[in-house]
Structures are given as C-alpha cells and as structure tokens.
Image 1 (cartoon, rainbow, N blue to C red):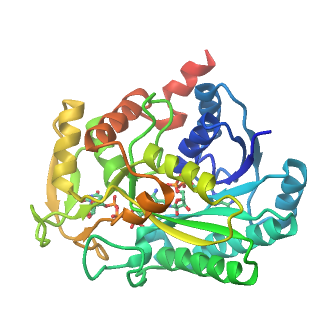
Image 2 (tube, rainbow, N blue to C red; image 1 turned 90 degrees about the vertical axis):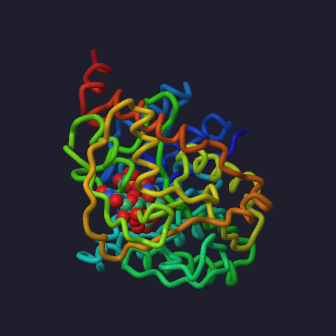
Length: 347
Ligand code: NAD
Ligand code: WQD
C-alpha cells in the first residue's frame, strides 16, 4: 500500500505543487489547510492533473482536537508541514500572530504526531533564518541570525525539531531551507496566487506584464552587485516540490534531524529577472528605481552541495523555465484562482 502523507498547508503555493509531485510519485495525500491564504480550487486542479484524489480537511492546525480526529481517521505515515504565515512585513506588525500561527501551531502538530506515532516530518524553513550572511554562497552551517519575527518563528521551529530528535532519536525531521520559490507548474493550471499587492518580486512582475499593475518599483540600484540591484537564488517551485519527495524517500523513519538548503546555487539580480520575464512574455515591463526596501540584503544565494550529496537532489529548471511557467500561469489565470478561468471550469 502506498505511503500516506499528511500535508499541512497543502492548498497553498508550494503545498499544491508538492501534493501533485507526491501523487505522481505514488504517495497518497491528505491535506489539512484552513484556506486562510489559499483556494480550494488549487487542489481540485491537482486532482485533475494527477487523476488522483486528495482527502481534504478545512481545519486550523492549532485546533488540537480537529487534528487528532484527522490523524485518527487518516492514519498518516509522515507529515510535510507547510502551514504558516510568511509575510515578513506583516510579521513585524503582528509578531504574536506569527509566533502563534507558526511556532505554537507546529508544537500542536508535533504533539499530535507523537500521540499517533507518526515519526517523520519535513518542515518548510527559509533562507531568511540566515539573516544577512557574512558571505555567499550560504552553507547550512552558517550563523543563524534572522532579522524579523517571521524568520525567528522559522528558527524556533527548527530548534524545536532539533530538541525533539534528541528526546526521541527514532523521530526523523528534515528541515528544508528554501531560497526564493518562483514559477508554476508547466500546465499553467496551478501557480502562485497572492492576496492583494504582492510582496515578492516575481508575482509583482507578472502582474505588471499582465496589465494589473502599471510598473515595478525596483528597490535600490546601489547595492554592491553586478548591476546594483538585489541578487537572489530563485528556485522553480516544481524543483522545490521534487525536493520534498526526495526528503521523504531518503529520510522516512530514519531518525535524526537533517537540514538542507534548497536553491539553485546561483544568483539573479532584479534587472536580470525583469529582462528574462520581458523576453518570455514579449511585453515591456515598465519600472522605476525606488529607494532600498528596509531590511533587504544585497545578495543571497545557496550552496546546495549538501542537498545534492545527501538528498540526491538538484534544481533542474533554469531561469527561462521559471519565467515562462510563471507567465503561462499568469496569462491563463489573470485573476488567480478566483478569476474567469475558474468560472470557465464550471461551465
Ligand atoms: P502559502 O501561504 O501559499 O501556503 C501556506 C498555506 O498554509 C496556505 O494554504 C494557508 O491557508 C495555510 N495555513 C496557514 N496557517 C494555517 C493554519 N494555522 N492551519 C492550517 N492551514 C494554515 O505559502 P507558501 O509560499 O506555499 O509557503 C509554504 C511554506 O513555505 C510556509 O511555511 C512558508 O513560510 C515557507 N516558505 C515560503 C517561501 C516563499 O517565498 N514562498 C520561502 C521560504 C519558506
Ligand atoms: C527579491 C528581490 C527586492 C519586490 C522574501 C522573504 C523570504 C522568503 C522569500 C519566505 C529583492 C526586490 C521585490 C519589488 C523589488 N519568504 N524587489 N521590487 O525579500 O529575497 O525574500 O521572500 O520565507 O523570507 O524575505 O524576496 O521577492 O520580496 O525580493 O525590487 O516590488 O526583489 O528588493 O532584492 P526576498 P522578494
């Protein structure tokens, strides 16, 4: 019988792509999501793409009794834990919400996992735990000094997992530190659908290209980088999804706490991204140079050697695939999941 994976936050951007990868790799999938930042439609499309079904529960993972009931019914073999809030600026304004929804929620989930003897978790961490690195590329053993409540909430969960495997050596935790996830499934059926004004570069650029916003503000062109704009390690969301499948395959019930950067290992500047997107969409992307965004760093990219060696994973999709796939998703779903395409599905 196939292994049954409980995916928290599975209706979200990275979660939905990972559910598809899991189903295509032969796993069964149970999703628990409160839909606070996602749309049920994403999972319907994952079901269509995979010709498989997902057991879906609309529930908040802080609700212990709801989670206990789901574990009792579904009896998962392992958990992939995406659920959480992820906006850096919002975390500065609402720190208590971030510590509750990211840290306390993870505590509830881990307690229920222990109660039901589920011994493997893959956790979504972030390159943000490194803060402003002393040098690039960033290795997993670099100093961890997040600069905002969101980053600190991720680091606290990492520490919780590290402590748990000491107390329960048979428990297996894989911590994946994502760099900058972008792109969409090549079908154009699932992708990133941010609420309101996007905080992140790629969804902002694609909304400019599709005509939803007039121009991109480039936050600073005086950084010590090739063209003065910020440099990041953008990684295709489907490569990220594959990393989760590899993590389960390599570390299922293996014991210990394993930490990996998931990035491509190369940096791309804001202007390079903008030009790649303009080429893929054959649209000019109007932009203006704006002041630096507070808290931003000049350059951040991964040393992904460890994931390559121990997870047998590497990113295979290049920048061209990232921008083409983002553009396909944006064009086919100009208003995201709540737009006309969903209406078309209903006809
Ligand atoms: P997302 O917001 O699209 O997905 C998160 C999902 O969790 C959403 O579907 C949301 O409804 C759900 N959720 C939130 N709180 C919940 C709760 N208490 N109970 C149940 N469901 C809840 O975000 P994403 O980009 O897919 O990110 C997934 C994970 O990866 C997050 O933990 C995020 O912090 C982490 N991460 C994201 C990025 C990024 O840039 N996208 C980078 C590094 C790490
Ligand atoms: C990328 C570059 C901006 C928007 C954030 C979180 C991080 C992780 C990923 C969750 C920077 C520039 C952006 C715009 C711009 N999330 N930019 N104009 O800041 O590297 O990382 O998302 O874990 O924790 O901090 O990503 O996409 O916001 O910015 O010029 O309108 O694009 O200054 O150089 P960031 P980003």
